[in-house]
Image (cartoon, rainbow, N blue to C red; front, side, top):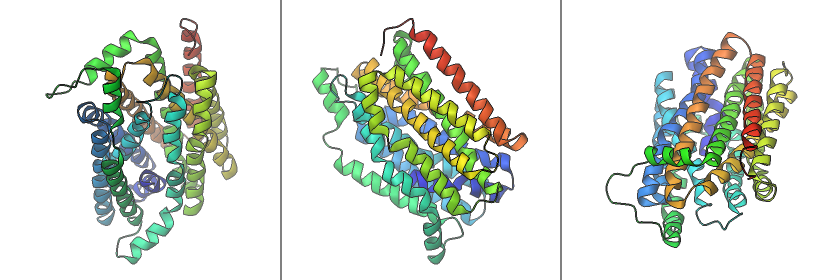
Length: 388
């Protein structure tokens, strides 16, 4: 909920404060970049102190980012708002890391459905979040905040609640318990290395590399189109509640069917579900690129975009977790989230430039080509490896 309530407004607020469509694309970039920057520190904290420590670090950063965003909107500073949104990205980093805590103790062949339940648990908050933008904005104004600062203040409360729940309730720590059951060596007390061991593991594990690439492509395609959709609808004259509804349906597509995706990835295989996700993302890009001013077509495209992302994230993350040993999981998972979000941040920058300089339709074409190339690569490399 904390991530979603600001997601519906961030690009619109930056657009209004800066007066530039291109700069508005940096709103999504800042949040995704923040998730990338905080992925490795959260992974290091998890490797050293367990999942609870990693998640707490991420949510503290998000809470601080929301407070900074409220201050930035109050003084009408879009550069300061972008800085706040970078820290807000810690919420996404925490949510992404949370899904892995469900796989630490999963029996063989159950990682997909267990991971997907954590993804699905975000459904209510994620769908409600964008629709809370307008009422929390009104409440914020009544309490003396400036226009559009209220949703970010509400997000701060949401992250504070998540922090308390994780700190008090995530006991026993699943990663620590998994290490004990697996007989893994205790983590040394000094500095924890993350990037080096992760790259070593990926070089020696082809299936983990494939999973990482597909997660990164799925996320890049999703955030590139999604981040610019509120701006497109805003420029087309859609009201704030319409924009919130479209984003809510998109987020529903991301999360509502994730248990089905998880079950399917365990039963039919992770790679087939990844290919299904690529097909859905390609369909979404085609629909979005040809939508024109038809809000219903943009909405349909955003729902398919969310479903494709769900297939890529759930199946890819489960495949990644199953492919590496438990003592290397935090490092590889942190590197995966880092690369995923760096690619996503790059995608939003490019998306803003494409929409600002060309059109939303061209953005759909570019995303469709990227997804097609990724799907062909997966099919070709799969022939060289056993089914997954």
